[in-house]
Length: 325
Ligand SMILES: O=C(O)CCC(=O)C(=O)O
Image 1 (cartoon, rainbow, N blue to C red):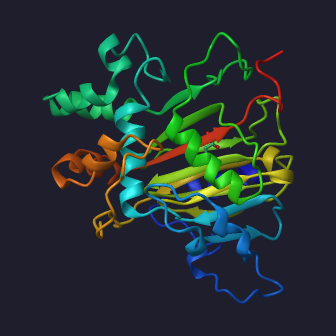
Image 2 (image 1 turned 45 degrees about the horizontal axis):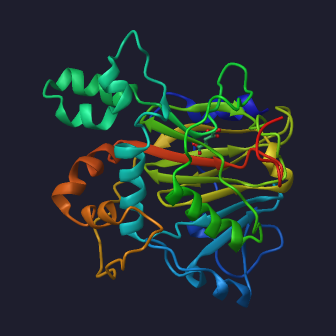
Image 3 (image 1 turned 180 degrees about the vertical axis):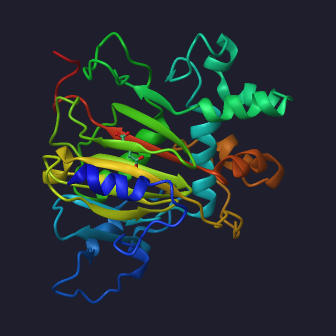
C-alpha cells in the first residue's frame, strides 16, 4: 500500500492528482469530527517558553495533529522570514563543513569540495562544474553520524552537535513537554527538484521514546506518513518552508517518505524591522546579521529557488547514558 501511494506521487507527470494531500493552511480552528487533521489548542503554559531569535512568539504558532497518526504533529512555520534565512544559510554554508560528514564521493570530488562544499561552489566559475557540484550534495550528518549501511551508531564516529540547532530543538521539545530532550544526531537532507526519499523507518537510535524533530526549508515537500508496516496506507501532507514536523509516541517508528518536491514561488523577501540581537549566545550573531543583507542572502536564495532542505534531529541515548553501550 505504502509503495503504491509513493509511486502515485513520484510519477514523472508534471501534474499528478494532489487532491488528497493535506494542506494545513486550509484547516480552520473549529474542529470537525470527521476531519483528517485538527488544530491543537495549547493553554497558558506556552507563555513560559524562552524567546529564540528568528522564531515567532509561541502564542502565534499553529500546531496540527492527524487523526489516524497519533504522535505526529506539525507546527506550521513558527519561523520569521529572517529566522528561515538564518537556518538555510547554516545548512548550506556551515553544516556541510568537515568534521561533519557529507555524501560527496572521493572519486568524483576532491578534498576541498568534500570539506567545504558551499565555499567551493561559490568560487567555481565554470557553469557546468557549478551545476555538478550543486546537484551532488544530498546529505550531511552532524553529531553521531548515521551509518547508511549498518544503520548502527558508533561512539567513534561523531562530531560536535551544533549548539544553535540543539538550543532550537530544546525550545520545541519544551513546548511539547519533553524537557529533557537532547539533540545528539542529525541528518541534513538536500532535495533538488525531481528528487525523492523512499519509505523507511528511523530506528537506529537506541532511544525510541524521545521525539524526532524535522525542519523543512525552501521548496514544498509531499510527505507520506504511514504505519508500522508497509501494508498500511499512508497519509500525504504538504511540508512547506518553515514547517516543523515532530514524530513522537506511536508515529516515531512509522514508515515515512518524501515522494515529490513541488516548486512554489514563495520567497523570504520580507524582513520587517526585526530587532537586532543583543549578543545572544543562542545563534551565530554574525550570520544572523549577515543574512539581512540582500547581497549576502542572494546565493542562498537562488539555491532554495529550486531545492528543499530538511534537517532532522534525534536523541540517540537513553536518559542518563553518556555513551553508546
Ligand atoms: O525530508 C524529510 O522530510 C524526511 C527526511 C527523513 O525521513 C530522514 O532523513 O530520515
